[in-house]
Length: 130
Image (cartoon, rainbow, N blue to C red; front, side):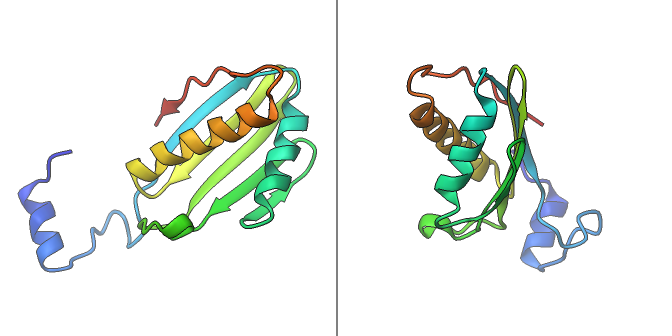
């Protein structure tokens, strides 16, 4: 992404973009992973990540927060994964503070879900960036 002259000046003089109001931009990706076992995989994934991440979940919905400094990273902000079990698949929505963070988490989500769904793996992930 090419920076404009205004972006360069804002960075140089540490001026916050009034449209962002000091909040980092969100980089979003969504996917519906086709599976008949969405609730099971949602719960397994949330239980697995609850050992070292902030997680809340029920049988049908879950939220995982990845801190900005997870695994030695230094992202502009935290990332969030929202999960929702549907009869025909698992809906996943990633909100990250940087495009690279979003891409890294897409891979982490896919690897972990494939591990839990080893009988069905590899699952189909057709991520849509917003």
